[in-house]
Image (cartoon, rainbow, N blue to C red; front, top):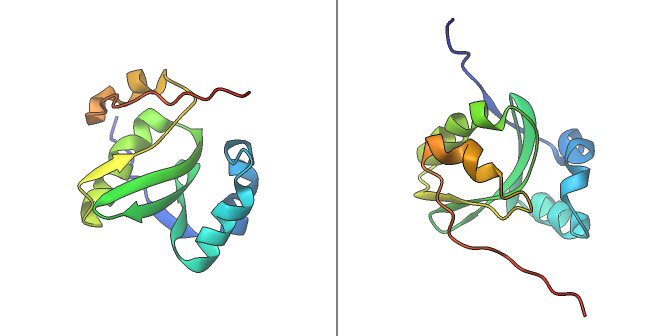
Length: 117
């Protein structure tokens, strides 16, 4: 079976908003404002949608939702490399993603805790 070439396609916020809604938390307005200002960008890749921003030489995945993360991860890494990024960073509430992303060199750097008082 031949591998399918995935396309990373930049799209407007309106095209990914509903698919990413569950990932926004309380941050939909600031994320939308970053996209509108050009500080963040929306993408479709395979059966997934994501929003990214650059911080120096690092690509920050702000939101990602959809199917096939294990299969699309190499395409995301390649797109980041072509854009001149040296690393990709994301925060998640799903620690099991490490298992899915080991094949592209993912390393667990930190845990993020929240205490509501």
